[in-house]
Every structure is written in structure tokens, then in C-alpha cells.
Length: 302
Image (cartoon, rainbow, N blue to C red; front, side, top):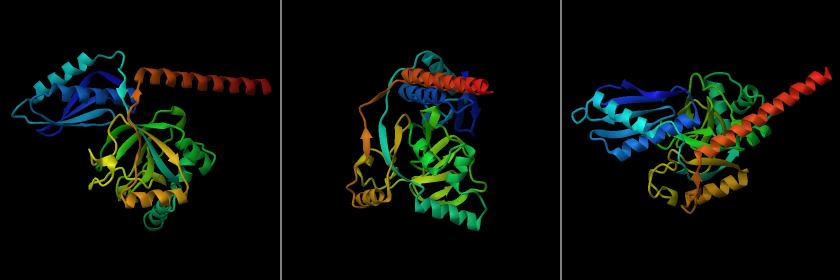
């Protein structure tokens, strides 16, 4: 649900939590980033930093320059000016990320957890069971069938939260309980309905199903894709996973090591939110029609 007006919560004496809704929805997330952009453009005195998330944002501010009440009034004004009507097109970079599904490194991580922490179904098999996916081959096809929207960055520098733009590719899975103490750098996991790419070897809780040889965070900025930022992605980017085999994985990894690898990035595209919503509705209606036809066939057979 998207709120008509923002909800404000104090986060200590220098932070404000601004909530725009209470769900995990593309339009809601887009409105979060649109409001963050408007706040930056307005250059409100006293605002230090913005951290947009899925349905909210954290605002860091200097209370000596602007009060909590005045800041909430300014943000409300910008929110009202944006309105609830049509959403403009926006630049959206498209990344093609090579992925080795069911790789030996995430397998090792999963087996280490099962041996030392808790017995559990191997992650890819658990995802298949929970989502009625036939097998790992079908899981690979389904997960790689959609573009993903970079909804947020956080938890670790460069770590992205990715929403599938095609609802037919939506998968869900619970997080580890308790979480892992380590995860391979480049591992790709699923938690809730979000996919993430681990930018470094870190603790984690997402169910693992793949690994990419290309970095999404580069503190040394060795590769050309990182010349302007330590993190590869920014909110509003899109990601498509390109399945590869081990031979290509090793070839790409060698190119990364010697500094010659070039990320696949399309920078000239525009993303139409309204056209996307229309396409999404068409897909949903098509699925409902398929369900109705299936029910009719069952009734006729009976």
C-alpha cells in the first residue's frame, strides 16, 4: 500500500525515517527514489545524507540548521508537489551479469553450514520446493528469465536488492535461521522475494543458487566500470543474469584478475514506468485467462 502522505519517525536526534508505504512494490519503490531525487535537487538546508530503501528512506540532518518539524514539512511539500499521477520516464542502465548457477563455491558454503550449524535442505532444492519449480534446470531458466530492478543498496557497500520486473519470475524463500558466518564473494542469493549479489565475503542469510565472476564493488577502482563509483549499481538500474558454464566463468575471472574485463552495460536506454505498468497488467490478465481456461477444461473433463 502507498500512503497518501509520508509518515515520519525519529531515528535519534539527527535522523528521520520517512515511510511512503508498507509493501514491496515497484511503484512504491520508484516513488521513494523520486522523492529522494527531489530532496537532493531542493538542497534543503541542514540535510546531510539520504539513504533510500524499498519503501522508505533515512534522512540524516543537522538539527542546528533545521528542526525535525520543519524538515518533515519540507519533505511533505515536495511529496505533494510530485503528486500521484503519471510517472515520467527515467534513464535506466542495463547490466548483463554472467552467472554460474549451482556452482561449487556456494555448494561448499551450504554444505559447511549444514555440517557445522544446522541441518537444512540445500538452498536450490529448497527454493524449488517452496515455489513448485520442477527441478534445478527449471529454476535456472526461471531465475534468468527476467530483468531485475535495483531497488536499494545497503547492508554492505555495493550490495543490491533486486526485484524481478516480470512477475512470472517471482520466487520467494525464507532467510537462514541462524544466518551464515560467511558467504563467497559474488554469490547470488534469494531472501523473501528479493535477489542479491554479495559484493564481498560476508555473513549472510539469503538462500544461495549461483555465483558471478564479475565484481559489483571495487574499492581500488581497478576496472573501468568503477571509475566514477566504488559500487557498480545505483538505484533505478536493471540487471539481467546471463547463465554461463564453468569454462567461461574461469575465462572471465582471469580477465577480472588482470584488469582487462569490461562489464556489459547499456547506458543509453530510458525506462517508461507507465508502459511497464501497462505491460505488467497485460501479463497478469493473460495469466488469469490461462487459469480460467484450465478450470474450464477440468470441469469439462469431469
